[in-house]
Image (cartoon, rainbow, N blue to C red; front, side):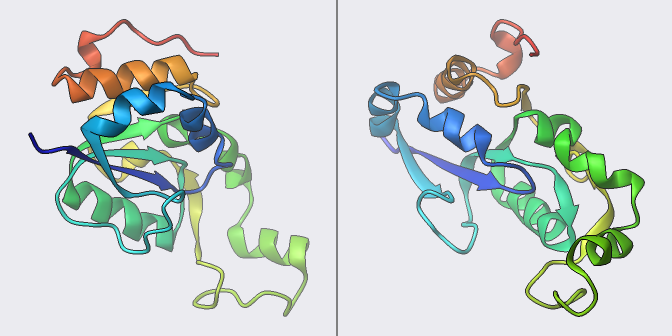
Length: 173
């Protein structure tokens, strides 16, 4: 039996969703024989691979780099999971939406400190937005961060071939 190819991705967020994923603790040992982790900030794989079965995406789309990543992730993944409130609603990253990006960066870092637009810092989009505004999302897992139990239930259901809609509704907050 082939393993389910799983990827986790961190866009604009705090990594709290990945920390909550690691809070699965010993339940990771239940999942490990069933999956092949093909991409993750934990594994430090640079290029998002082809033929991913389940992609868990944390964070909002806030830069041109994030936008490029989410389009590639959608193209290469069968099931895309919006993991956490930043990916579902844009949450904390959207707090900067009231400011013009370059003016905000200059106010924070000063002139000439960071190269904007094409340098090592990705170009910010005008607004930070949830991933469903760029691509189709198959499963939403809300929470800031989502509880480990909810992540485990979601992954377990997907590995069993069930959609999230078949599982009990998650609670916000």
